[in-house]
Image (tube, rainbow, N blue to C red; front, side, top):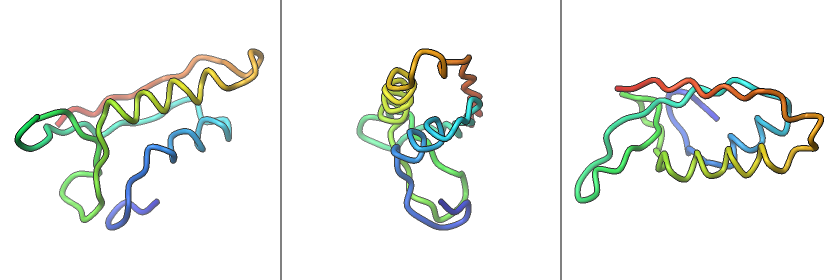
Length: 81
């Protein structure tokens, strides 16, 4: 995806993990009303956002789908805003 403008998809995390990425940065922001559920977005840009819960579930599923030999440690870097 793009960092300044574009659509954010949880599937991008799945694709990155399948391609061998083992360090993923999550830009976490407070979501808006009414739930204020945490969201992931590239802040102060025109990108869309996704729920942090959905991204983490997608990351977990992608990791579990890997062959056991490919399940090397996975680092989630949380950038809290």
